[in-house]
Image 1 (cartoon, rainbow, N blue to C red):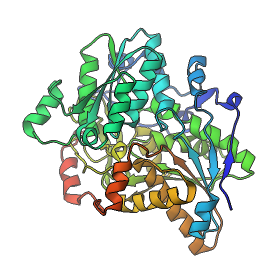
Image 2 (image 1 turned 30 degrees about the vertical axis):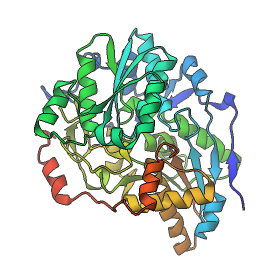
Image 3 (image 1 turned 30 degrees about the horizontal axis):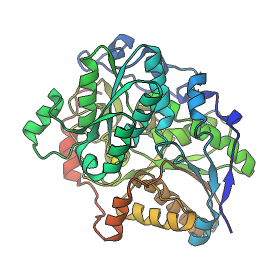
Length: 452
């Protein structure tokens, strides 16, 4: 019983991204200006983003054309393979049919390049010469550094301090691409200095790193800011994953009953799930969508759905999302890419509408799932991706208990070759089944903006 691979040709790389805003049962709440409380306009975002990305952020068109220059870069690793995990099915003794889309074949080993290439392209077209960004585990930072190298742009990366210390190989990759990397919070920005003054030993957070990157971009005309998740256009760029998977399921003569993915800011989940969810919203075929998040940073399962800042320094507009509060500083779990206080607005909106379910899993269970996966399928997942593996295993075991066969699709968003230290720690019994305390969440939520 061997793993089965489903492949597409280069000609089948999607020519358009899918924009789920065209199929929403009701529009998502607007993004608000923190000063006026009114919906923001293009001029409010222009200091941070090129105009084409601003247009994509608010577009209601179902399909947005992928520029030829972006598709040409995609050809280096796209289309990515989809596998039927028969050996894992056998190990679990489940009647479930388990499929996974493998995004670790990109040059940086994760799905993040699907949007970094697009963002670098649009910035280059507008005459931008430098991009600032943040990164948690380093997957996004390396993806943006790669894209900047391809389009001859400077790249400045603020990396969450705990990940900066935990993941030196990601730092090395970012620097090899030519990116300049700084541990966040840093002394280079007002936002960073303010955090360090109050918390000299701060381990950092994505919210803090975003504040630093946004501050630098806003103060320099030649610089724009780039985000690796959360925003509508970022989630849309990732839909090449699900669009390819739909075509690959035709080869398999099957269709998923459940589509699931790890969830931090939402781009991973949106990439695999939104094209399938769009078909459901249009009345074409039913599917269950499941977001799997870390118990240490449970924005969907324990956060509040309300307007909040996307960063700790309160430099960004207000988005309505599931949030743990912008001052939330998560524990230093190894899944650094999922340590964000809020969930993307579109994912949050769809969860509120009942179209997306969510579950939180602790890191011991996720690493156990990752170890079982590598022993069955031969691919070492990134710590973030382990959440999807754990969620898929849970669903497969439910099928076993119920005696039913369902097709389960998950996004294996990246490999763990740069995260071997995390596995060494797990195998040595050094990791904890950490769940963020309710009282800490309550304290962070107490500082939410006083609106809607």
